[in-house]
Each structure stands twice: as structure tokens, then as C-alpha cells.
Amino acid sequence: MNTRINLILFLVLTFFLSGCVTKLVRDGAYQKAQWETQAVVKDLKHDKTQSLNIDIYAIKNERARLEISALLGYQVASLVMSPSEISYSIYPQKTFFYGRNSERAFSRMIDLPLHPMNLVNIAFDEPVRGPGWKCGLDATGFISQCENINRAIRVTWNTRIEGKKKVVITAPQFEMQWQFNAPQTEVQFKSELFTLKQPAGFKAIQIN
Image (tube, rainbow, N blue to C red; front, side, top):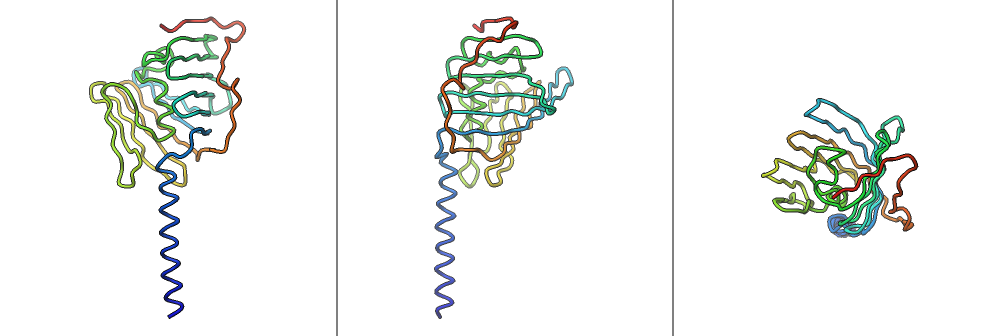
């Protein structure tokens, strides 16, 4: 009898703890985090594929920094942004862009009409925001897909295992397979992390 009671108590406790953990992750309890990610980006228009490492440092809905490098460590770009402002350096081109953050802000770097802050929303498992976007949840309450039918853009969260996840972004001339490692959520960011200055010798171009 005691063995049976102990088994029941164990099952109840396990269920309760599992429910707590699931709820914590699904609710996105953390407001800031750091991710190490790997991406395979396909430029379908020019038939080019590039593999990248993308490190993300972000405060939800406020600020973010992305450091982008090739797999061998070659620095490709640095980017900082808020919902209203953005600046980024493209190192191979020696260009520095700055100005208003919008769906057109990335046009010099990738052919994807998506507000850059939505990349941070994707990392935080938040819906893609903007006119024409519709999102859905899976059976466990996680965001699973966002789609803009008019622009033929889709974001799909394919797998989640212990904080890791794979996200696929598709558009008419663009495809990105994006693999996230589990986030680091116990982080303290210095304010200067979210400031990007024009590197010496780089051409500055204002984004309107």
C-alpha cells in the first residue's frame, strides 16, 4: 500500500513540476537574453548560399545587437537597433548604414522586406509584427508559424528541444534555415553594447 501511495505522489509531483517548467518557457518569462545561432541563407535570385554564425544580444521590445560572421570567423556585419532606429556596418563593403528602422532597413544587405526587430521577436518566440501578418500556436501554446500572404513570407518554428530550436524563414527570393542554441537568460548588458559607431574608413549611408 505504501509503495502505491508513494508512486502516486511521485507521479503527481512530476506532473506538477513539468507543468511549471512548461509554463515558464511558454510565457517567455525572461526579458533579456543572449543566443548563439547558426544560419544558412539562400539568395534564390542570384543562386547563392552562405553559412553564418549570428550572435544575438537582446532586451525584449527595446534593443538588440547582432554580430554576424562567416563560419571561419570572418566578420561580416555588426548591427544595433531599437524599434525606431538602426545602424549596421557591413565589413566586406566597408559601409556603415544608419537611420530609421523599418521594413526597408535591410534592403542593402538582404532581399527580405521584414522589420529587423522581428528577428528579435523570432528569437524570443514572439509573433512577427506588422501589417498583414497572422500567427498561430501549436498544441502546447508555443508560437509555431507566422505568415504574410500578400508578401508570400512565412516564418515556421520547426523543432524545439531543451531550449534549442530551428526556425525557417521563406520569401520569394530568400530562404533562411536558422538554428538556435538554448538562450542564456542570466545576463547583464552594458549600455554601450547597443551603440555602434562608424568604423574608420567606412562610407556612411543614411537610411530614410
